[in-house]
Image (cartoon, rainbow, N blue to C red):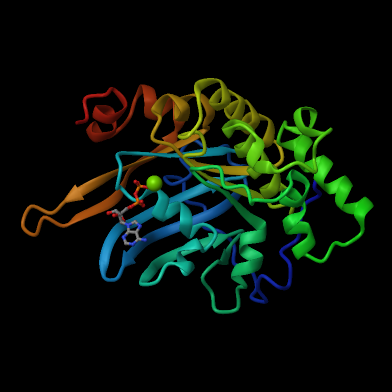
Length: 294
Ligand SMILES: Nc1ncnc2c1ncn2[C@@H]1O[C@H](COP(=O)(O)OP(=O)(O)O)[C@@H](O)[C@H]1O
Ligand SMILES: [Mg+2]
């Protein structure tokens, strides 16, 4: 499946796209021509007034895998959810700062969050297939988008399942319930469901944490195959996984205010993955990646 370059659809926004800032620090180590997909600038998220994470600035490059690592509660999921406006669905969540997608402010008033979530898909920690047939799971998004012809849906479902490296295992039983699949197969089905609507970006929040090592390896291989067509941002608590699969790594930590005891997530360091794991600039990153961290 080779989706052609998708132009910014009119439904996403009418505003002219400003040129993304060329920030040498944030795109550390990036080849000069690596197109920036997301430009995050001083992003903070509050839940009912509690500042969960503050001042995150980073760029995500096209056709790369960007990993978010760090201890539990440092805001990885919170930041990831900002990338397709999933925090909109959480009552009391407030996003500050800016998050640009191809130069367009994702939080601008005229941006349609439904279209944002079509272009920027998400795969969750626990595989969450619908209690429907495999076919209906993958055809769900395309049907919502108005595709009705059986032959057309069959083509899309096959392409998506091939893209998710699941086709050969399920092609003879597409009408069977998705709930009968193994955990690893269910997660690949969820990836197929995500790519069936031809997104440009796939966000993954600890996609392997409920899987055994073999299924995990399969998903990691799949991510390598997918990155030629998609930009991937993955949250993982597994440092080895980040080191194995990602091109860039963002290390988050929790800052505890000495006076108030308030815990706030922050981005400590962001760089090429090999640099983060071999020569990190910040001692907190080094402590974490070498396992000295609590
Ligand atoms: N829906 C929510 N409502 C209130 N607080 C939340 C919510 N989601 C996360 N938090 C809080 O925000 C902080 C960051 O959480 P999270 O982004 O889930 O961290 P991580 O994914 O790094 O473990 C934590 O203190 C967590 O308790
Ligand atoms: Mg999380």
